[in-house]
Image 1 (tube, helix red, strand yellow):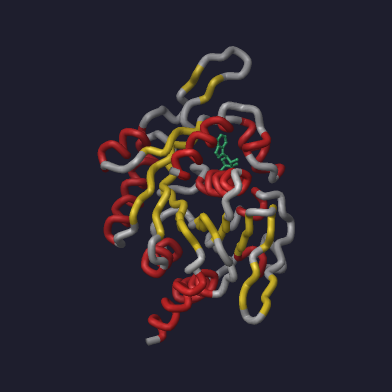
Image 2: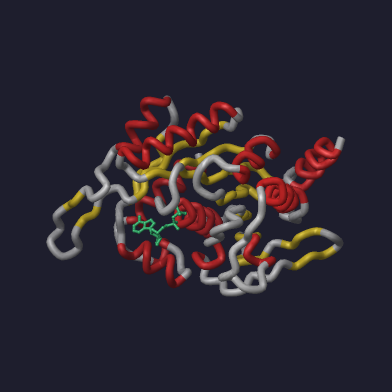
Length: 261
Ligand code: ADP
């Protein structure tokens, strides 16, 4: 009965949300948070109402990627009010609950799941075209809680092209299968590098592995993003890829076009 009441609450709070997308990856460091944040930013700049929920309790990076130092959680009438980043983008990150961002969270699974359920059931998002959820890498409690409890959620899976990353992506894809989480598609990040000095392309982490995996699994391929130093700079400055002029920007725009379809 407790679950049922909570599920009803989650449904109620998410009833104004049109599309819920959970960004997942097999491994850390493949650019999942960077992609999630920049897709959210770009969708919001295109006029969509977007919510961004960071459920990476151990390594929240959404606030930093948006250039927000503090992100205090504002609770009104027992509801968490998202932080308004621009006219169309609202954010909730667990980081807002912490006094010191360098302090690690040391919790066991059930406590974590309780917190995530609360982030799903108590945020006053209002009407949203897209709710983007940035999950931690892998197939642990956090994505499992979302997969089991958020109706109509779909996964966006980020990978780099080399086999060692793809091996873990297959775990993520099987996770989606086993939990009946629909997959919107795969994004291949860090896909090749064109040297800005000499123009020669180097496939540092190889290329095409994400696309091939999508084909093999019968899943949509949403696009590739190359290695682009502007992405790192934008991440550290918290300014967004849209403000850069390297090759990643147009690739991101293409991906967002496909997500909008
Ligand atoms: P994850 O969420 O998968 O752990 P992050 O989004 O935190 O990964 O990215 C890890 C690092 O890689 C960050 O420093 C980020 O700026 C960098 N990065 C991500 N995508 C790219 C890219 N396409 N080109 C260059 N650097 C990238």
